[in-house]
Length: 316
Image 1 (tube, rainbow, N blue to C red):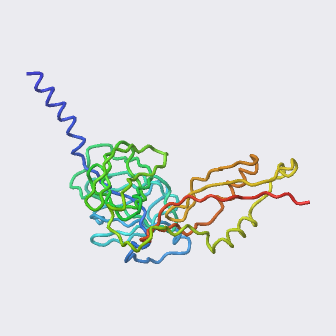
Image 2: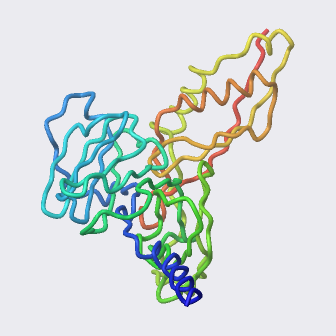
Image 3: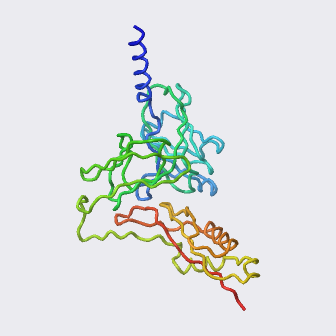
């Protein structure tokens, strides 16, 4: 009699986690072209710098808090959508319900950027989840070769289309991209604090497209173009005194990624010159304002790697 009972308990242990309810279905950056009908509340100049979250999926049933960053600056709720103005510095959200209390604590995976709009989709739940309410996530990029809008499935659940720039729970997941009926499956492991790009390569024959179109993305651009970029570098570059004293001169090659939002990330020295010069270049790139992001043929913003040389020249 003991053996069947143990077997039943073991099966219950296996099945129970799969039955648990996930509150946040997806969280991702929203392409500007997809931001529609956003209300404009009465905010002062500083408050207007905050990020905005568009919440879909029965948002009116919940309240939202941002931990140490504080309460939302403004909230406009409708029957099917809620717009939340997020305090600067927010890295996580706590979702609660009047009857159930706290139902989810969700890490965004990064600090939300000022003036950018994000979308959070919620699953409708009727009772408080019986599990750890804290969701740890990592920010990722999901792309297909031509960014033609392949469907993205995570653990057999549709979470959006490529290009996708958002957070995914840390851990192992079944991953699928589906385009024109063609399915490409794999398994991915999302690790905290390790940015990753995920995707699959589809052949042109798999993609329905206009044969006269050309898949050439619009390259990222510094505000005002190359002329303003050169001016920015000349104005802000400081020649380290130690390098001048030792007669060090030459070029530092630096690379960085212009994110979908235009933010700079992943700064790396590709060809070094002198430690003080290399560090000066890194600090210079960090000072840059947001760029205009790179665009695919269908005008969707995607991350693009840029490499530029920065020269240190001794003068007589």
